[in-house]
Length: 189
Ligand code: 5GP
Image (cartoon, rainbow, N blue to C red; front, side):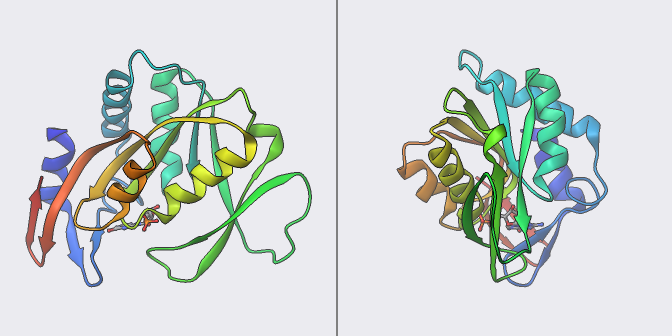
């Protein structure tokens, strides 16, 4: 998606550790007009697919997923990263390593909000090693829900996540795919 690529070119900053900083429009300050255009692009890409719910993970997926959900006309559920050691109650639960913060998070979603009849679109801001998406896929599996596909804003194609998720047979639609990046330089696929 040209508009997103241009924004990344103009405002993105490459940090150490293969982290792209896009906090002026994507995951701190948020350009909701851009999010709506991204949502419409996913609606176009997944047209013909039955999707009744969007599933994302806190925190930075939520804004993008909400605006996308508005374009799809479906509800959005976000998986919560729990800090409590004792995971109790009626929740699906998975452990997922964090790319940006290191360590492992307990990721949970209430059993009330993921149903075996659900046909889910997973949404997230970045795809790097694929752990966040794998966590969401595992939560969907626990619920017996169907994953129709994943909509990603920025896929860092030089990292293994995209390959890993597509190898599971899951359709991944990334709106900007980065082939390589370094200080002051970003190359798209
Ligand atoms: P993965 O689980 O695929 O390794 O990483 C995906 C998650 O890590 C995303 O939810 C995102 O929040 C964060 N992330 C991964 N790479 C980047 C990056 O280059 N920049 C930013 N801002 N977040 C990233």
